[in-house]
Amino acid sequence: MSISNTNQSKLDAFDMKILQALSADARMTVTGLAEAIGLSKTPCHARVKRLEKEGYILGYRALIDPIKLGLNHIAFVEVKLSDTRGNALTEFNQAVANHGEIEQCHMIAGGFDYLLKIRTTDMQNYRKFLGETLSELPHVAQTSTYVSMQAVKESAVLDTVG
Image 1: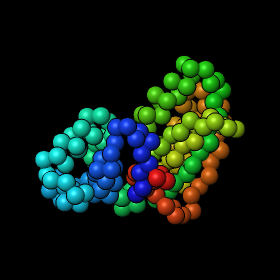
Image 2: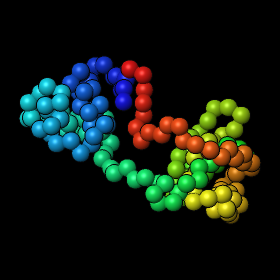
Image 3: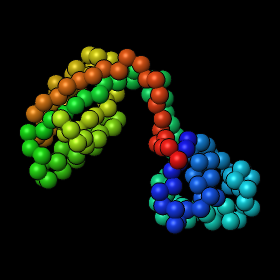
Image 4: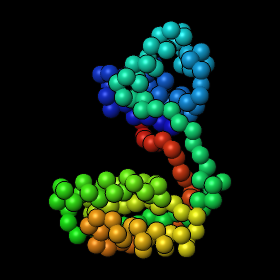
């Protein structure tokens, strides 16, 4: 992963190396991390703690393979809302958060309002989710579905050009 340092005044080269190393292997020990970036253990640990405190490191988690769990069907859905005033957007955003099938939700500037990534076991379950859940979310006026045939690249972290 390549991380772009847009906040040059707060992050130095060691901080950037720490972020890159932890994004590749979050289970790395402080000793291993220190060796990898060329610092001793104590200042390396202090930097990691500072990066956590300042919000550069949001947390650590296990990446679960959704395919092994039978979640093989991915659909991308364009959603147009009937109302895009503040309260309507808030209601939609809160409703989306309550559904595990919705893996990602992005507000879009363009011909529709939101783009959702939805993961289900198969087309039948997606169709049920669309008809019984997604179309019933607050202010949903129209949806358009695009089914993924193959995931060419998926990443749990943002890849940015540095």
